[in-house]
Length: 162
Image (cartoon, rainbow, N blue to C red):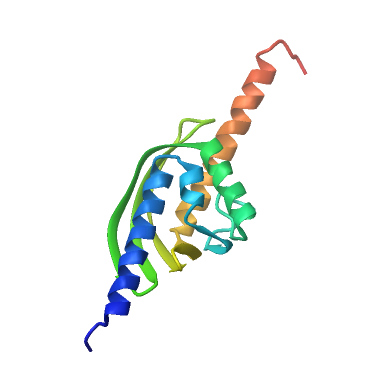
């Protein structure tokens, strides 16, 4: 079936919005990213937020911004790359490869995940993030334990004898 001019324009907009949003995020430009986010954004994640507090599902621009601020406070980005991108109308599907360094522990999170992003009128209205949930949850447990051990070491070696 031939693609219409309207479809081609929509796909061009989708690609532009996706690439610009990813570029802003990879550069840690939160304000630049938020320019592309709808007030009614729905962000779905397939991980347990009680285990992975930096990746909860959220609804609404303020909640999404707060989630991203938490990630920026928790991690430095060593790499954030789009491995594969397919655009179909208002939807972009991508495989992302990331290497993030946890600020408190120095542990490296190296994984890939699926990103399904839907835009309307140049604003992202939905983001589905599909992670290797077991891997991400294990990483979150690792950095939590490492951070708790670091706190205890500081406490016990600071002259406390109880």
